Length: 422
Image (cartoon, rainbow, N blue to C red; front, side):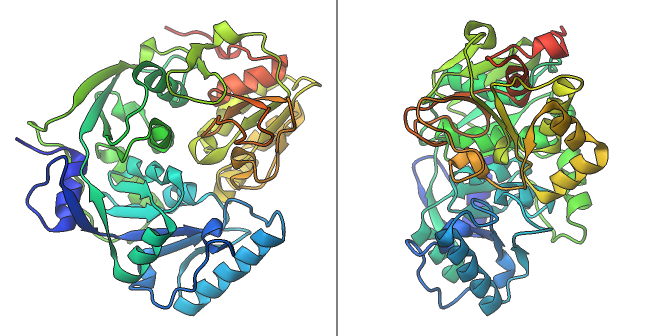
């Protein structure tokens, strides 16, 4: 029997002809990504050796610019680390700033067929680039930095075939909410995406889905490679190293194979505290009063997400009772939005547009929730206490749903502003 994409990458990187679910494999690591949390005093341990500085990326993203003295100190420690080992791919606060997972896309750092590690749980975002990418613990990061390898258990794979095309008010975030609400958790399993809809899905859309693989508790999430991927790498990383894209074998064995028809997906919202088995049609929650609306994060801080929000908000105003916070995923995206007029549209409507950072998504700064407040977010998580006080309620929706809700002052259906299509 053949292998899935993820099995083929694990086999290739471990020097084996084939691997099977249940096996433990030691694999070579091509890329290690470090971010500001890695350098916090509470976790930092002086690293004496880095096997290859060219395999390392350092990005300050969770609290950038620094939100308090501990994060400022972490940035200082990170800069010393970068200087000590001569790390070239360094994204400090400023022009090169952004969320690590977004920077990987902006600069074409993730190569097909490779292994990428970071200690942030949403590292799976890079799986859109036909690699295997995973968040691991701090000791695993140190080991990969110094030894160039790590280990994984091979899991079974669920295959999702994406078919059809989106209706105007629907996006990939709604697809994720459909999968999470219909199929629940994917613990110990891998997720592979493909299907006839791929030519319609750019890398931003694909990254939204792989990023949210962390919320399915999937081990790895990846897409089949195609020309859209190859063109993106060529455009964003000229002179990139050679790579070997990986395709599933025709007789690959899957734990399950499921078809998602994009034209049948409707705008969905996840209720507070969990995304698994917790999605509802937006109409079921229409009228729920909100205090804050947030668009951003590694999942939904793309230029496409900002353009979608601007389309909903153009010529309209955010409700007086709502704070709409928009956080681009990188300064590159911020500049794109500024040049295109998207930022002006958002600000004229009453949004606050912040610099590129994780910001409100992780409750670190730039939009922390107070006791008893309600937020609807187009970010990665709606866990209790995620964005501030534990008594705050966090609903999750697409950027279009969040923008529509910001106008209404209550959870609202974006179809009212973008049409139903179909």
